[in-house]
Image (cartoon, rainbow, N blue to C red; front, side, top):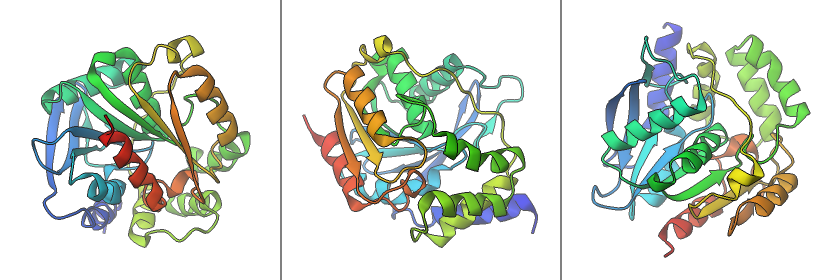
Length: 282
């Protein structure tokens, strides 16, 4: 079995955990084809799920099950990241404005004039920038242990991730995951998929400065910040302090026992319960 075949087999093994009635589509945008999983009543309020960098949409299966009774869930493979999305050969996503444009055209194609967005890690960074640049398109915003939104990464986290970033391999992915999650029991199929992402050709992710306090002060969408108690990506207390100081009316909570990489696949039930309550509140 080739590397690509092993990756797709692992992808499909996790995708099989999605609830009955899930459908899939490939949405064409100027930046490439975006693969999306859909679950829930077609006429229900929409919610868009964005995974972390280097992850795929498949890991949202428990969240889709929790939200799909009252919402139409759309979970996205990021263009250029591991997954079934494919970047356009002649128009790569290179800037924050490109990311906003991609998300704008994607939601247009899905018929979403406005949608709630739930993002984890890098996906939360994308969601936050989109909410700031296209406030008319955002309904509610949920940020799961967001990176580079309110503070930087922990130097120790970056140091441990460096070998994996410079010379990716399944073994290095597994080692980093064990370190960050502290041995938390994880879905073995998802762990296999996470390891296999090392073999997937991907493009350099768009990075940029954190939003300024002045920009954050203009955030219009009601926002829920959920932090992983044992996250090694950053100091969650500092993240919460800075976020509360900058974002008016921010709702925050810390998920007990969670680490950055146990979200969303091994998150405490409280995570999906809080998201459901927040999205359903008036």
